[in-house]
Image (cartoon, one colour):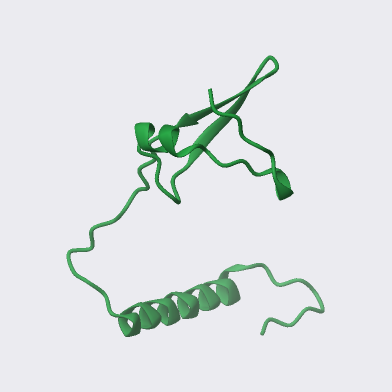
Length: 90
C-alpha cells in the first residue's frame, strides 16, 4: 500500500498506479467518507445535465439572450413586486 503525505491546505496526491487503475482524470469528482478511523475515497460518475437546443450559439447570441432575460426580469420586478410605502422602484 503506497504512503502519501498530507501537504499544505490538507491535500494529498493519489498515487499514479491507483489513478491509472481507476482511470481518475483531473477535474473529476471523488466522494470522501469517514468510516471509523479510516478515510474512504471513491470514484463517482457524475453526469451533468445538458440541454440540446438543436443548434450552436455564438457568444453574441448568448449575450443577446442574457440581455433579453434581464430586461424581462427587470420589467417583471417593477410590475409585480408590491410597492412599499416611501420606496421608489428604479
